[in-house]
Picture 1 (cartoon, one colour):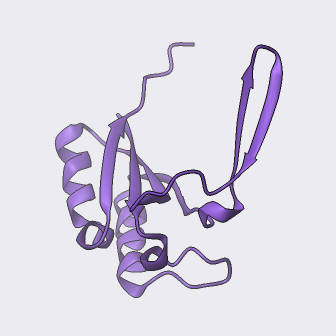
Picture 2 (cartoon, rainbow, N blue to C red):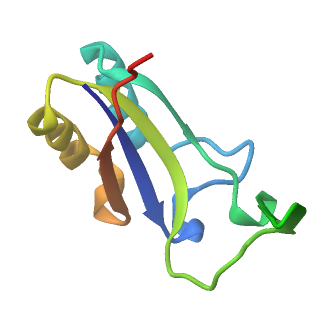
Length: 114
């Protein structure tokens, strides 16, 4: 079963600038996920100021530069996990060092039916 683990936090604490190294604790966590064979993918996202938001309403495309809202937390990165069940996904999420300074959202993916 696949789960998306989304990491939300204060961008200033998430180390999102291109060219910056991830923390040793996060690197150790990534290594553990890979060693266990549960990490399908994962990356840090660049800061929200680099993002674009697109929408089409009544046939008209609108593209807005980020950031969009004055919020305390921004999506800073993700991991895609392939695990046996929710219990295992929760166990991995609890081990993520970012849980000490961020909010982690864990969501199951809809199984591919096609």
